[in-house]
Length: 247
View 1 (cartoon, one colour):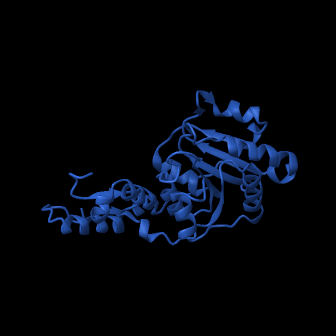
View 2 (cartoon, rainbow, N blue to C red):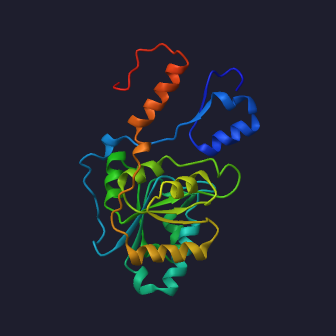
View 3 (cartoon, rainbow, N blue to C red):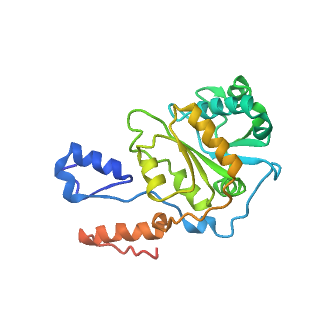
């Protein structure tokens, strides 16, 4: 930290954590978030294999460790018992590694009695995953509680925002994820990972309201904008380079 000419953090909370632990970094540290490449979303055709009258909630990526599908599975199990008619037209679409902690995700879903609500799609190309996401009613982002949960943001959050679908967030509200969700007025719902009742209630509210296709104002997460911030830092450090923002 002392030897670095400059430090860049990908979340505001991470920056605050560094300054708290290493006060001498205060004058040489900035926050530049992850983002999305706008080219990936130009002329992106939605892909949907489930019935149009289904409410499709899609998660793209891998579940691992504390980033678990269990809270959403438990909430769906509860909803199925309470509101079978409505939840019967709901489908949870999971794209990615088909196991969680060594168990098949479909077997875990069967344990909760919700396997009929689940569609598991093995890993595929990013372009095709984005098409599935665009063909969904909403997107699922899963965080976790505990150590370091407040400073982490999954990269898919920015891809979700660029897809422009409501986002159902299962993550601590007092976290970097929550900070962006509330600070940038992202369309959707957010619940704590251990609050199964709240997950159930907000999921049902999202299904009933079906918020349609929002317009999230997320230009500041466009990587063309972010790279200009990086360029200014490099110029301030008198870095000589042939790099231009057009490259």
